[in-house]
Image (tube, rainbow, N blue to C red; front, side, top):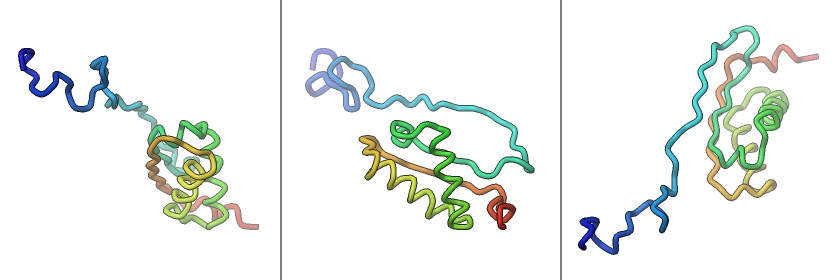
Length: 109
């Protein structure tokens, strides 16, 4: 068409106000890991954090890692299920849970 965009002048992936529907600006933080103190890393998209605070997500994951004696795949699934089916996140929920050390063994009584 006349504006050189083709079609009806509406680009795919943009709303009617020409604002992007998806923002590709991740939150990035660089931290030094403490091999003695850090237990795991939880990386997740905003769908999880729409319904969990960071501290609540960490507490949830830590409690279940202890209960299951360190099964990060199962715990990620439980966290995802809680976010989607219980807390009703309306966004996609992707979770990566990486255990840095078997901290749950230190908690045996």
